[in-house]
Length: 149
Image (cartoon, rainbow, N blue to C red; front, side, top):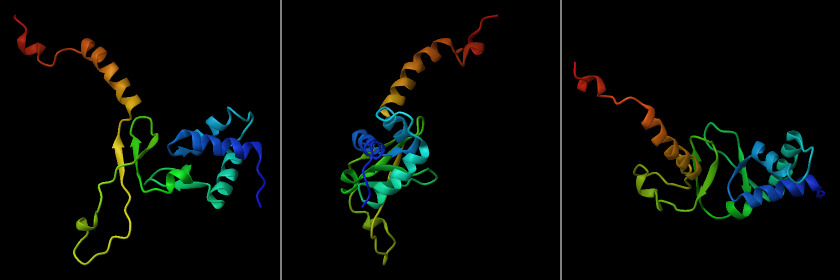
C-alpha cells in the first residue's frame, strides 16, 4: 500500500481542482503553492503512483506530452480542446454521437477520440483586444492606390 505524503496530496489536489487535464509542469506549478521545494521528479513519481492507484487518468494527445486528469472526469465519455496559443487542454463534454456511420462498410467502431483545436476564451479575448490596436497602427492596404499626385 502506498503511503500518502504532503507532496502526493498536493499533486492530487492540483489535478482535481483544475477541472481540466494538466501537464506535469502545470501540476508542479499548482502543487508548489501548497508544498514548497517540490521538484518535477517528485511530481512524475507521484503521478505514476496515482495512475497505478486509478486516482488519475492519462490524457494523450497526438504529438504532445501526456496530461493528467482526475478519474472522476475520465470516468465519463468526453473529448478535449487544445488551445493553439497557450497549449492548455480543456474538457469538451459534448460528443458528436454515433460515429459508426462514418466507418467504411463492414468495419466495427469500438471507441473514438476527438480533439478540437483553436483558441481558448482567454487567448481569444487577448487576440480580440490586440486586434483594434494593431489595425489602428497598420497602414491601409490600398493607400498607395488612392494617393493623389
